[in-house]
Amino acid sequence: MNRNEPHLARLAAHVETMLHGDLAEQIGAICIRPAVDETVEVLLVTTSEKHHWTIPKGWAIDGLKPHEVAERKSWEKAGIRGKARKNPFGYYTYLKVLDSETAMPSMVAVHVLEVEDESDTFPKSGQLTTEWLSPPEAAIRVEEPELKGLISRLMDRTAA
Image 1 (cartoon, rainbow, N blue to C red):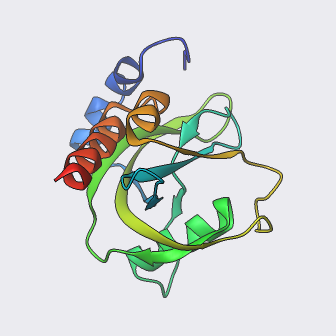
Image 2 (tube, rainbow, N blue to C red; image 1 turned 180 degrees about the vertical axis):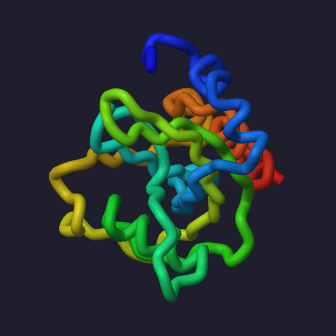
């Protein structure tokens, strides 16, 4: 896998797999909190391996509904507690890197989570970097075009 290729070019090699529905399924959260100027801020975290910016996400957890998984992953990866909306806000695809030779396409169901509390101590503290950004800055930092679109759509909804 060539990390220098654009995101869509890397996904193109997996189109046949994706068309047959052979996608890993993950759940993520766009965490939002009120900003000083009465807009919202979006939380981004770095991935553990490549350290690029994304949202808190992970695999489904037996016994938890998808929005509850979004809440759990936000806590584990960023120290965020809050309520995730039950219905997904949208979806995006990316290549989940399993090892240096293997990647698989993954579809992430994204839930909006309104932050109620933040903590400096959480399971992945010290391993991942977190940063609160304006939606335009967050959209610039993430590399997945569909995730950029979801963040942009969030900007449209909060502006209304």
